[in-house]
Length: 288
Image (spheres, rainbow, N blue to C red):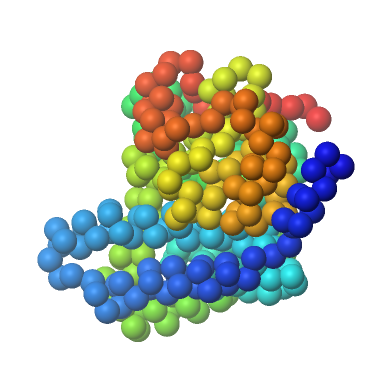
């Protein structure tokens, strides 16, 4: 901060997040309500090409909002995250906020950072096939793992998230029927795997260069995913909105330009699957 005082100007909220995130969530809900094709093959293509992509954008929108980057007041950010959560079917936002805070403050600490695979998980999902299966089922694993690694009593906001989500899905059923719920459910379930944006899950903290713990990606997907690819920058300054992270890199480039960065999320997935040196154990871990 003393080296680059202009960085202070980047802190604060980004009000454009409010409108952008609500638009993406509304679009994902509108597709099965008004535009869902009856042909099962076209239905499947819409899910795979559109639904899964929008799901990734929404998940990463929730990530941005739960850093309290849309509004100045935490309560308003919580409500926005809960609303944007609607198309994801399950109540995700407030539990993610609680556990993701642990990830930032205790990155790499076993038993606290639930981003780390547990030992049996890393031993079971080995080799290209095992890692591919793990990629496909990342979402349920990511949801269940915290219950075993670092269980926390649900707080008020997580309960609100659950009640509101159940109410929203009940109302959505009367609008779009079982087909609409199926579209949302499949979009969420199939979003991981070989989808290019899934690369961010294995790009950010798996070890691709010895001595480096966190990795950035500066490719074009960032335009759709709130610049989450600027991951070193995000971990250094988690209270700077994603829209301003490219500017941070320009200001403090000498600290980031020499770090290993990913060129392509698709290449990351390929390397993760077929490089024998990379396993679910390939994470920097800390005792303290």
